[in-house]
Image (cartoon, rainbow, N blue to C red):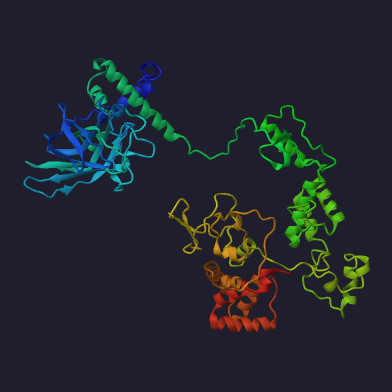
Length: 614
C-alpha cells in the first residue's frame, strides 16, 4: 500500500496513531532545511550528455555507456555543511520513467565521494562520510554499498522504479566552507550494464547530523507545517513513509527466521509404461504402483483409492517396507548390524539379497536376528546380543595350526560343516566364513580420528548444532570453490567434535580421511573398502592432525607421570587400555627420552594395536 500510495489503506483511522508517533519522533529530523547546491561544473567521464534543468537538477542524455562517473563542482550558501542529499528523480523521458537510464529504470551507484576544494586550489581534500541513509534500498543493493570502496557493489532502487528516491550522506564532522571554497561530488556508477542515473539533484544542510534523514522533499515540506496546513499529497506521502518505516521497525523485532524443511504435494505422477523390447517408441501397458512381487506374503501391487496421488504412493511404499511380513527389510537391517561388528555380513553383499547377491553363510541365524529385530524393535538390544556373544569375543589371532588343531577343535566344531570337524580351519575355511575366529578389522577413518581425540583428551562431546568444516573455502576458478584442508587450525573451537559432525565436501575428499579408505561421498558404496599401503603409514605419522594431537597426548601423559618409565606406562594405558609390559616400558622410556613424548604418541597412534580391533 505504501509503494502504491493507496490512500484507502494508508489514511485509515487505524493507521493514524502509528503515523502520529512517527511524526512526533522523526518530525524534526526529517524536516531539516535543505538548499540545492549552486552548480559550477558537471562532467561525465564517458559519453553521457549532462544538462542543467530549471529546478537545479541535472539530467543525463545522449549515448548510454556501460559505466560512467558524474563529477559535480558546486557551492552553497551554508558556511557549515553537515550532510549532502542526493535526489534521483523521476523523468518522463527516461526508460520506465527513471530514475535510472537502464531499460528497467534501475540505477547502480557504486561510490559516493566528496572533496573540499579551497579557493585557488586544484587538489581537493577527501571528506569522510560517517553515515548514509536512503528512503528505499533494493534487496542486496543497499545505500551502504555506496561507501564500502568496492566498485562491484552499489545502491539500487529496483523494483520501485518510475518514482523519485533520496539518499542522505552525513559527514564525520561539519565541513567549514571558506570564501570561494567548492564541494566536488563524484557519483561513480561502475557496476556496468548501463545502470546509470538519469536525473539527479544535490542539496546541502547545516542541520545537526541526527536531524538529517533521508526523506523525499514532499515529506520534508509537509513536516514543516502543521497537520491542518498539509496538502492531501503531503499527508499521503508522510503516511506512506511513516508506515513503511513502522513496518520495517516491527519486522526487525521479530526473531531470526529458522530454516525448516517444507514438503509440497507434487503434480500428478507421470505415466510409466512397460516398453516392448526395451524400445522407448513402443509403449506397452501402463505400469501400476507397486513393489517386488517376489515377496510372497505381500501383494505386488498397491491397492490405492487414488493412484494418481503421489503422496498415497509414497505412504504405500513406506508401509510395504515396514510391514512385519516383509522379510527383506528385517534381514537387510540385521545383516547391516552384523556387518558393522564383524566387518562382513552374514550375507557378504549387503546391498543385494537377490539371485546376483551372495548366499548367507548362516541363513537360520540371519532369520533369527531379523525376527529379534522385528519383534523387539530395538537396535540396542541386537547390538548388546552380538557383542556379548562367544563368537564376537573370540580373538582375531590365528592360533590353530595342523599340530594344534586338537586344542581348538571343541571351539570350532559347532561352526564348521560336519565333514570338516577334523580339518585344519586355516585351510578348510581360510576366509573365516564360519567365524572360527574373530575377523581382523581396522578402525575406519572416523573411528580412528575419534580415538585419537579421545586419548589426547581433546574429544568434544557436544551434541547437535551445525557441522564443522575442517578446511578453508575460497573462490575457485569456476562455480566450485577451492577447498583447502592444509591450513586448518586443530585447536580452533569445534575442531575436536566427533566425526559425525564433520562436514564432508562431495567430490573434494579430505586427504587424511581418504588415505584411511573413507568412501567417496559422490558414489554409492554399500561397504567400506579396505586397503593397506605405505601411504597410510606416512599419513598417520606426518599428517597435521596426528602431529598436533600427539602434542596434546604428550601433555596429558606428562601430567600422569613424574619420570620416563611412569609416563611410558601412562601412555600405554591411555592408548591400549592395558598395562605395559616391562619390555615396552624400557623401550618406550628410551625412545621418549631421545625423541620426546609427542614422537612416542605418533608411534602409538600408528601401531597395529591402536589401529586394529583384536
